Image 1 (cartoon, rainbow, N blue to C red):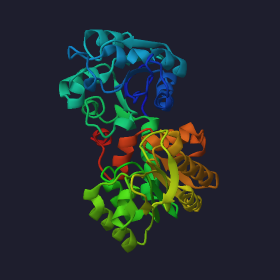
Image 2 (image 1 turned 120 degrees about the vertical axis):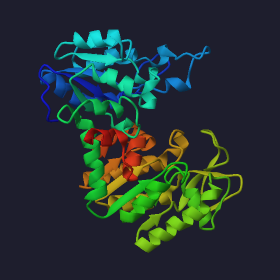
Image 3 (image 1 turned 30 degrees about the vertical axis):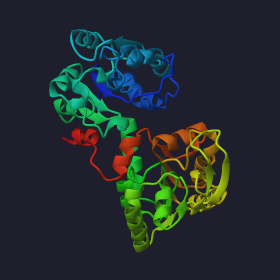
Length: 400
């Protein structure tokens, strides 16, 4: 960060969309901690920080009368923890814009934080409304975007607001810069061999990513539910496993493209199978191309774990997006954890590793391995789109 913050007020778009339990207590503060270097930099350089973020999807869970459930989605729940993390005085504004927000911003002292109410309480946020964005811009002297997790959304607080700050009055925060820099290490300057690990339920969610990866990786590991579409496309029997029938031709095209490009595409040799999609289902191990009728593959098996781990440990650059199985059920979490351990061991040995995507990030956090990964992205959807080669509106807007 290069701008001068002394006696300036900085409007900072952070991603404080953190999970809360039924008592509104934060259960994972990763995103808040990730924003601290930027916030502390502004404060320690004599500035004040006006923070804006969304929290949850208030429009999807309204009260019976159709109004927003303010008590569930208010940013007020974050104030105490934000004070603890930042070591600064935090004021809370119960609105995002308007007379009260203007007054509180004007009275904010250097070294203090003003946390605005949930940006999604304002209908103009998701529409990218210019009038709303202009009101936000008038609260501060400088705009800082440090919310990579929402950079793929053309919302008022992530994108539109940037147009009201000229060059020299806006910049990315440390987290945003770090996300872009680390993704570019994989995309533009990887040490080889480069291995990508892609998991998740559906091929359709990752088509663009898989097509792009085949253009530049050396090895491509496919796990999770999407692997069974590939298995069936190759003539395998997959029982009741998840399959996208309409994507079988596409799976064969991706296999052919990998062969043509000299990319080694690895599918799980065996699977942990279950007779029901449930945590307490009966389980067994089977060849992934020979799963009995009535059974479904819910995790990669021991042979696949061993083969995938060997490839990962022999890599110099590793990209991981998506779990190897139904990670949220303990009986089907072992494949994802085995991959997490292999990525950590490869990183210990000098490889560069980038993990992005909700469940794969959860896996490294849950297994206590995040400190042994080169970079853990805070942006699931945003990282996916960045790796697919799409322009992210939140990034493009800062370049204007």
